[in-house]
Image (cartoon, rainbow, N blue to C red):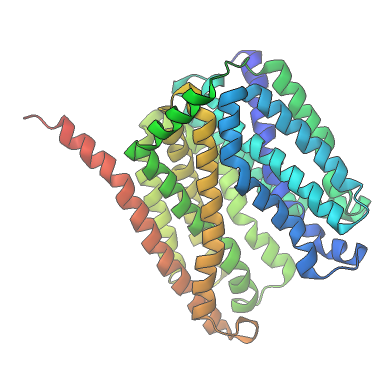
Amino acid sequence: MPSSSRGALVSLCLSMLLASLGTSIANVGLPSLAQAFAASFNAVQWVVLAYLLAITAVIVTAGRLGDRWGRRRLLLAGLLLFAVACGLCGVAPTLHWLVGARSLQGLGAAVMMAMALGMVGDTVSKAHTGRVMGLLGTMSAVGTAMGPSVGGVLLAVWGWRALFLVGVPLGLLAAVFAYRYLPTDRPRTAVATGLGLRAALKDGPLRSGLAMSALIAAVIMATFVVGPFYLSRGLGLDAAWMGLAMAVGPCVAAVTGIPAGRLTDRLGNQRVIMAGLGLLLCGALLLSFTSGLLAYLGALVVLTCGYSLFQAANNTAVMSDVEPAHRGSVSGLLNLSRNLGLIGGASALGAVFAWATPDVSHASAQSVATGLHTTFAVAVALILIASAMAYRPIAALNRQQKPR
């Protein structure tokens, strides 16, 4: 691979890594922030929520602006905004200042996520799209997994301000690589972009890919919402062991992302999507009956492997046939569908768990286990719906190819 292509991939990988790291690294500092600003948990929780809400609110707009003004130009602006916002977070004198700066950081992260996926087609050939999508998925998982561990070290050594200041040099480094190695822009007109996006959304497989992304993200989010309760109250693990168990999923995703992308390039999108959904279904079924730590972790590994396969292949399928002028917009929609799925999984599947486990703070281990089983029984239904969406294009293609 030419050095320019490697440099371009470094910039895209750093963009995805930093956006994911920004989501998870702040969580570990919430107790310290509550103490530093003499604030309640509900107040400091907005340090996390402001970042997520900013991403969700503007990520589609960010994609469309990239198509209109140029994706390289907008990615550079997003990286610089992210770096500046990290600096503002690090010097925040009040909690309100910090929440506002986190909103700006989320705006930069939204641009980085949308442009990272949108520029894959500008950076590598179509034959290598799957492996790069898998690589970006790996970077997202690595960023999520690194947050608690790296954040814990920074917090212990330099205090809560270091959680945000670390993003300044990394964001500037990514901007240098983007400026140096990413291909130059070919801006499109606003009319062509808007009309083209509406035409693209009339494509059935594209709509199915976005809907499947949301459904599967909801299932994965359930492991982060329900898992801690099962591990702590259902299995009696202390905080340290629970943290290690919770890290299994992101670590598996980090290891399997690149192989999943290579399989996608070799076997094709549809086959790998169906294989991923099959593993997801097996993992969710195991979680709906699991009992004990080893069984839970084994089911989580199966579920996460399926997610890696599905995400690499589905992202490739959604992005590979999009016109170059609309890649930023569709990338924004793809990220939005995932974020909405994460929010839906946290709220809807969390509500299922709460319904099945009344008074969770005093519930017995068996009651918590019942809540886990009920939640993932509903998750099985969501995966089956996604599988039906994935099967329809395959069935249509087979009918077209059948001799008459």
